[in-house]
Image (cartoon, rainbow, N blue to C red; front, side, top):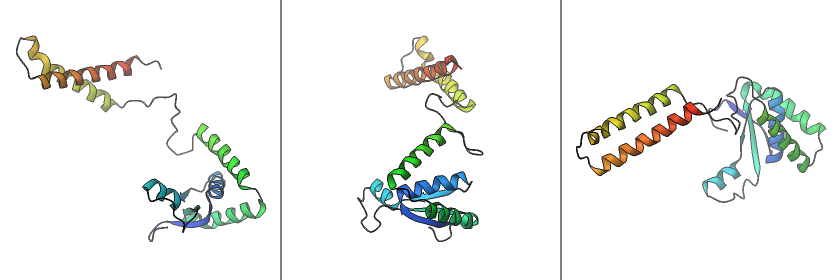
Length: 172
């Protein structure tokens, strides 16, 4: 992959085969990385690269290379699955992976669950609320303030108030 990388290429093939093999390696506890130059070129706006076709590269850490090559040979020597069967297995395993949490990894956030706000975020919202209200205080004493100051401070006060109210009133 990269000249001084700690990863070595273990397999090159269709994206379907690479995803299937990646799932097999994940089951064996071997972390792997997929590199797809075709996808990268399309996302960057260069269009399809005819030189590479739809080949994807699967790389593993150098210390796992021997085990990964063994699993690769074992997987594709005993398996005569068609691309559609491999694609179905890859989809099934991705669905199972999303439902469970990986050991030692950051837990997956389900769509129903909202991320928790940090203490710093809450303190920042409370501080901005107090500051924007302090900037509006001269209005209560009858002084004139520039329109931009009134609008900006009011917007910040409303935004911070809504954020804090939503945080403290959500059901747990």
